[in-house]
Image (cartoon, rainbow, N blue to C red; front, side, top):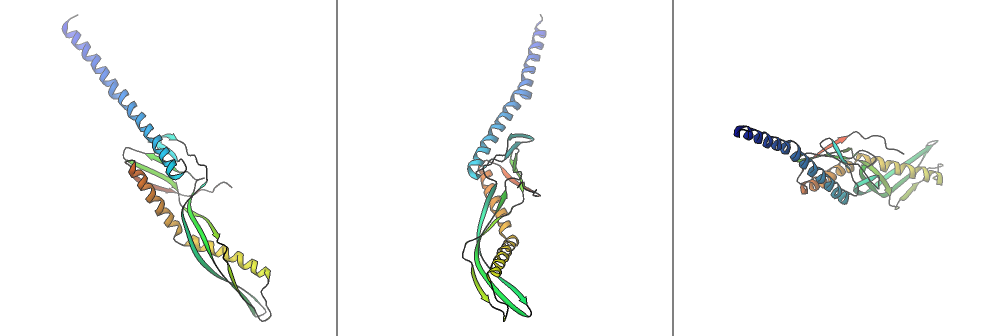
Length: 213
């Protein structure tokens, strides 16, 4: 075999090996490292937020969403509320003024999809809009009755007034800044978390679907 032919064969073999390394070995190693990093990030996320979101590298799902709870409250806010219930009969009006404090919790329904898509330098978090999770009375309700001339307050009135008071408190909480505050608070926590993993944060909100009962 001539020297030139041997050299040509050697070059072909070297080129084939180089191509295999560039096209197969390096991408496979990089992909494996990306998946391992995604799993590590998912575990760190679980420790920080108490649930595991869906984690994707590009379009491949590395971790599926898992959660032992179905709500993530990120804001708890106390507020005072006052409500006036009235009833008129034959020109006589009775009135019950009710006041008390409530604890409102705003956050995220984890029945909804919560996913993280990782790229080289960015973490794209997709989740449903925040919502008011609960409004609970703190048990300090106070009543002030004002009797009508012949239309007097009774226990049935107290019950109706209390129900209306609680409903009105929830309406107030839904219109207050609690939900937007919950959004800002979560985004701050997410930004800090992903910064520790060398990722910039992008948050995308989706329309909330009806949760299963």
